[in-house]
Image (cartoon, rainbow, N blue to C red; front, side, top):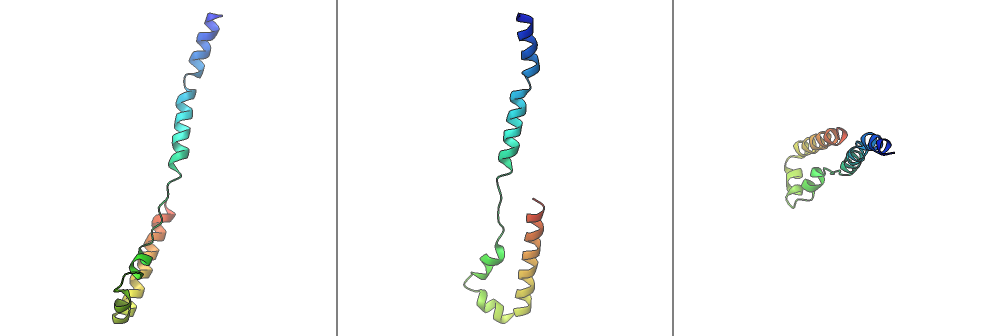
Length: 76
């Protein structure tokens, strides 16, 4: 009987480690960050003046920011 108990301990010794690893992996996937720099810049008090002074530049800058943020979020 004692031999059987020792064999069971050897077989099950990796289960707590595997469960801990699984829990850590599942919990680590829950974090996500939204990148909203275009919205933050458009809400700046000086944004309307910048958009009027250089509309094409402002449009291209916001498109570039959106594109780069999309790539970053897609890779996560």
